[in-house]
Each structure stands twice: as C-alpha cells, then as structure tokens.
Amino acid sequence: MTHMPRGCVPAPIYTGPGRTRLAPRVEDSTRVGTRVLDLSSVGVELSCAGLVPGNTASSAPRMFGPRPGPSQPSDLEHLPSGVSTRLEGGTEMAPHGVLDTYVNHRCRCLPCRAASAEYGRSRARLRAYGRLEQLVPVETLATHLGWLSTQGVGWERAAALAGVGRTTIEQILYPSTPRRGTTPRVAAAVLAVLPTLDDLADAALTPAAGTQRRLQALMVLGWSLTHIQRACTLSALGRVLTRDLVTARVARSVRDFYDAHWTQAPAAAGPREQSAIDRTRARAERANWLPPLAWDDDTIDDPDLPAPAAARRPARSLQRIYVDDVGELATQGATWAELEHRVGACRNSIEVALTRAGRAELIGRITSNRWVAA
Image 1 (spheres, rainbow, N blue to C red):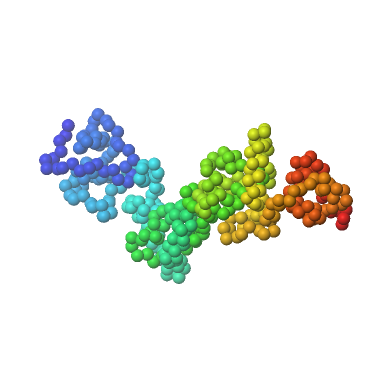
Image 2: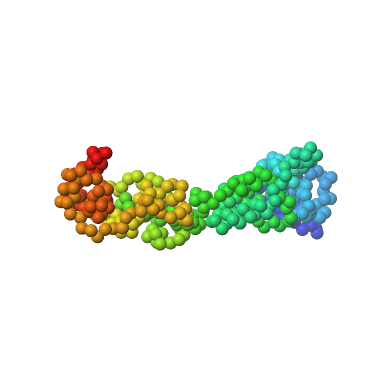
C-alpha cells in the first residue's frame, strides 16, 4: 500500500457533472482516501483535490494548490467525455452542447461554453441588423398570471399549460433580479392560457350554476342523484344543488355524464328502479326544473343568465281533470290549446291524467286534431 505524503489532507472525491459511476476495483491499484482506482486503466494522476482527467506528471505540484471555488468555472473535464450531466434525483439527463445546460445546470464543459458563446454572437448579429425581437414587459404577464390565480389556475398549473418552465414563470412573478421583459414566444404562450373548465385543477372552485342546471335537467328525465353519483364516482351531489361554488372535478364529471345522457331517459330494470325514476321526476316537477332542451350549450354555464321565460313550466294547477270530459272534447275536435283553456290545466298535466286513466290513445287523437283544424 502506498501512503499519502505527509501533511496532505485528502479532499472529497469529485462527483460533479459527468461522474456517472465509480471506477472498478482491481487488484493492482493504489488507495486514495476511501476510493480505489486503477491507474493503468483510467490514465489519470491522483491529487488531494480530486480526480483531474488528462493530467500528466508535470501537473503534480498542483495537488497542493487551492481548490477552485464554486463560483469559479471549473477546469475539470467530464468523465467520460460526452456523457450527459445527471439532474437532481439522478433519473433525467441534460445533454451537453446546449444553452439550457450551460444556464440552468451551470455546466462549464467545452461544448456548453461553445453553445453559450454562439448564442451571444447570434444575438449580437440580430441586434446589429435591427432584427432582435422586442421584449414584452413582465408586468403584463404578471397581471395575467394574477388574474388566472383568482380564477383557479395557479402559476404552476399555468406554466404546465403554456409549456413554459416553472423557473421562467417564477422569475416573472418573483424576480430575483430586475428583468427587462420576456421573449414574445413566452409571452404569447402565457397569455394564451385561459381559465376554462378543462384547464382548472381538480380542487379549484368554479361557479355551480352550470352543474346545477345539468343535474336538474337530468332529474327531469328521471336520472336520480344516486345513479349519477355511482356512474361518476362522486358523493354528496345533493349539496351541489344548494351551493354557489363547486370543485372543477365535480363540474367536469357532471358535464361529461350530461353530454352522454341528455337525450335519453333511464331504463328501469325492475320495480325498484322504476320507483326511483318516478320519485326523481316528481321532485323535478315540484321544483319546476327545466328539461335539457330549455338550455343552450353556450349559455348553460353562465351564472348571470336567468332561465328562459318561454321554457318555464306553468304553475301546477289544482283544477281536477275529468278524463271523460277530455275524451268528449277530443271527439269534437278540440286541440291542445282549447283543452288547456277549457280544462284549466297544462298539456303535460292532461297527458299524465290520460295515461294514468288508461286513455293514452286520446293523446294522439288530440294532437291530430290540430292538423284537421288547419
């Protein structure tokens, strides 16, 4: 075993960029500190300051010199040459020879320094020709990001939607140094982010008007809240009908279920399911809720838009409907408008009364009377 010179304190082993694995242990070796390296296979000189690839015997006095500080560019080349620098966590790799590795990962190898120099020369040429892009003030982007945060889109979510690095957005909101502005590409990507329902985080709050109207329309058709909850893997949907705000996850789930079932009523597999459908429809009728066709897709989510007056159901009439009188009027050619005036009930109530009395054939006859009268 070869002992180290007296007075030399072993320094930490170099584990910087490019050091991807330890050297293999061999029998013919020399121990330095706690690391065993094969001098014949690696071809490097040992020093107390670390491993310096490519050194010769003439550089031996440097082993007693000061070690470069972290703020100074290191002259340690990568081992082996061309291997990418490992990022934090050791799972991703940053390629050499690009500006991102030079700036964000502070790599000072020859390819990365050449990429930084080429970037500076290209900007100098564009500035001389008057073709350098004008920067967008950071205040404009900071105002837009602040508005997005009030709508439920945080700055991290906005960075992911815009395809911009988190560090860039963080420097716009919380600059560590004065910034003249951002490039038009970054500005256009950030300003294109809007607080749509699909872009909100799951826990972000959004107005519940559209979700309430969709649930009410589905209940008019007979879809119970229990069935909707089971299909959407949600819970406590009854609270949505009385709240002003709802999470984006619930709003998206209800919207997707509504888009798939707004044109069809639920099918009853037995008496129990039919009873649940009847109770749901009765509740919707008592609350005077509107069916799906009463709402437009572009306005159903607008909380400031009232329900269409033409689509409102008339108040439930307390007038008793006599089926025999309705049948007599139908045989005389009465239309639905005349029946509503004579009986004092709306068309829907008359149809329900005829169906329950087993006289559903009169519904088609009354409808055909309009064409005969015309």
